[in-house]
Length: 307
Length: 262
Image (cartoon, rainbow over all chains, first blue to last red; front, side, top):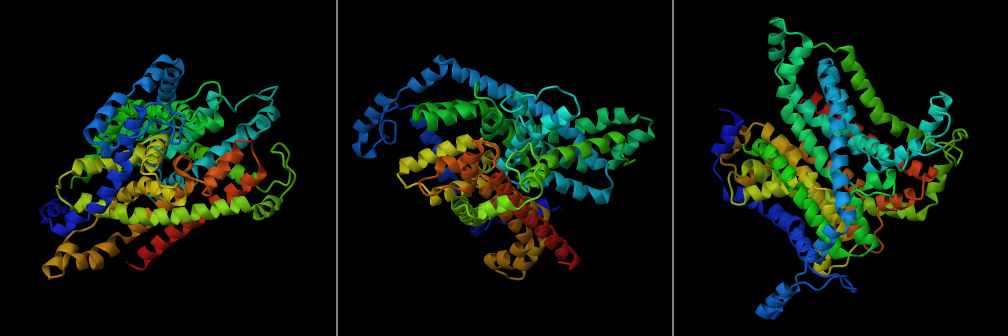
């Protein structure tokens, strides 16, 4: 009998049920409830007030209050999202950048994960650790490190000029190239880890069997290794794609100011224009765009804890 | 069969170089005597000395450390309880919703989490500052703790717990005497992960902050937007050193545990 089976057989004591209460209530109040409020505010009107939107539903007023509440609902913010191309372009740009950088991450991350599994056994934990370690250092610091390198007088241009690859300094900072570099750099551990985890569990015997039957190495990889690692690839893709769509820090520090990703648009709408209903509407639409990948992510995670 | 080809070696080597070179350059330039990035003025500690005189930066660091300590501790308690509920709770009502709420924050773009939490705090009409950031970070990081602890709980032998219970040990005592020591390493690494995530966070903190609660990332960000400054290189190097020290200590400690036969 496996551990899993034993655990399932264990009786559910009331104490075991009660431990759920505290984290459950916490997440409902601080994770779920806020989304309801975002939805509510996205439907209210911008007002020059503190806070800058029409008031929330007042339960003290009873039915009349409820009627007023529905009467006051406004789709102005959503109409704004559709009518002003800046929002649509922002969404499209974010999705495109996220898609391309996730593809780049996959192309760069897979060989790294695969390379680690090919390393001698005793080296693997060290190599694994080295890939994880940058994740522990500050995100902001890692982006900032690239400004040092990519700016006009930065190291990259100095090296390129010294090697006579270019004659004049190239503008790297404030370009899309810089955004891609920053994203790939920051998210690489998130792509490598899940792929390494699945590749590591791959039974060696399968590869040996293929080799014994005379299958060339590249073909073994294509027919055995790659298909069996797709679960890890999918986890990595979701783990990168979803947060990249809403990325703010990287495009803000490394990208140009002419076209914005949706996270920046939201930020500007909120902090710059103080248009809370519009910022909330941007958030709601972003959530709707991401709901499918997020559900997919959860359904991939969930079976693992069903023990 | 397990042999590394040149392609494997090159991809791992290039990957690691890509990951570490920018950090190494940042660290080296923090010791540059010259203010300009383009000029190497020799080794110097002057930016570290300048940092000591920067009260604002030190205040922010202190606020960030306190928020990280508070939120990591709260997140560890909540996250561990969540992990126990998910692994040992059996099928309870609302389990699907709960696991959804645990996993969604792992990938949720920070701007969404930040904005929605801020709007909650505004709706509740609480004063924003230290505690609102701490609550936001607790929410954000408890899910990471749950994932880490849950992996450990799924891993170990439940027969130990059952033996204790069969011998008449009450559930709470079983948990404290058997389960807790077994999952302690995961709880510690969960706490460390929560601590560094909180220390690191810019976006959620920017939304939920209030007067007098400028965390270190918020301060660094506002300086960085104005361009590269050697003082910032020095702050970043210190933060990297602190993290490296913590990770090395933790891995040495776990090695020592293995060696001492625990």
